[in-house]
Image (cartoon, rainbow, N blue to C red; front, side, top):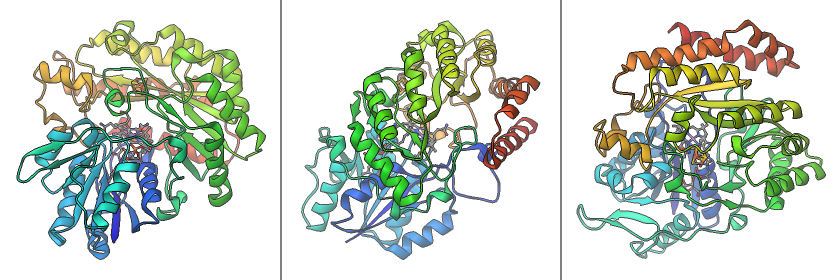
Length: 469
Ligand code: B12
Ligand code: SF4
């Protein structure tokens, strides 16, 4: 039985380049690598990362593989392309079983199945055990309709959403099957987010109990589950020894919140003398000077932090649960420990005023963060913000269908501010943050090797291009 797993791209490669393409992240699809490792002993499994392929190239490969099962992974940004891929597979072979998994179908199962008519089954949430069961049952010619954690059409257009599937203990999930994917050398994080190559993502915990209104994690993985520090360090050691990985990004929603656990991971990494550096996500309310030191000693060189807004009122409305003072403290503790700080900000919440947006730009500049990413607010399905926008008449339940899949356009905006103005604010934010002589002087002082020069050059080129477009 042939099984093909495909990572749907947010856009297929074309000759026209995307404006932010140069600083965009290209990371390997970790979720699919996990699924592949779950079924590799049961079926003949292949993985295609369609990021960077043209639609024609992908079609050729899909036809060539002629699989019995096609599993596709998609976020809301890539969901429309997931349907196109399923259509491609079905047109070639109407008996192929098409399965969609990932953040989008999890957030909007019914709405998606209503219109993605070439998808047979949607898998909700973590897919390891559900996917394995689906594959085995299909291989054995047994029915799959009573498997937990799936949504499907039960004869015609009747949708059936089964009860949630069982979650596997994280330490029991085998390490991702990276050998089935293109080499790590083909991927690169944003130039401000790595120091060494090749690099790779590791997930040490899954989930987040916070309820920020723009984030769909509260629906996707509302509780946090941890791998054991030993299991995490075993994976890192495996990556170093087998793939020459030199840097890790912990992709966890909240790596640096459980200090005891994160400190144990630092200890494990240190005691094994792994030649590795890493970055992780931190929340502004959970950093202390001692903990920043612990992270640094464990090999961390950068923390990333969702700050989102420089307006205390907006922070409250989005239920971020942090204060601006905590952000400043975290930057201070991190810098004292020798850690770099990368912060994310969002522009265009429907309840923001022009003054709020200006406060965000000013705060980003004054906060001392080393790198700032400013993004348009795009309300993803499954979030409280999405519901709010629907209530206020911004869009209906299929609103996500009309978002710009590259996210280079706002998904909503305050009613009294035009989209053009929001776009201007975003450009202004980048210009004011990065085009400061003092900023470049500081950056130049940190250049230590050729890779640093390359990263700075790549980032600068993209910024100039973005600001002059
Ligand atoms: C690392 C990461 C990235 C990386 C790489 C993503 C990649 N290559 O997979 C980069 C930086 C490139 C990235 C980009 C984006 N990301 Co991102 N990213 C993440 C992050 C932090 C980790 C993803 C991960 O590896 N998780 C761990 C694995 C194990 O989980 P998983 O991928 O979800 O896979 C499991 C299940 O979803 C399911 N599953 C997944 N696919 C399939 C397929 C089948 C067939 C089945 C059965 C099951 C299944 O089973 C898997 C195993 O349990 C998540 C948050 C998170 N912690 O999950 C956000 C997240 C996925 N990203 C998000 C977003 C919004 C984006 C962007 C749109 C951001 C942007 N501004 O451009 C882009 C879109 C990229 C795209 N191709 O669609 C959102 C998605 C929300 C939504 N409703 O779509 C998330 C959830 C963050 C959030 N808090 O909102 N991202
Ligand atoms: S933005 Fe971060 S803290 Fe807030 S709910 Fe999402 S993952 Fe949790």
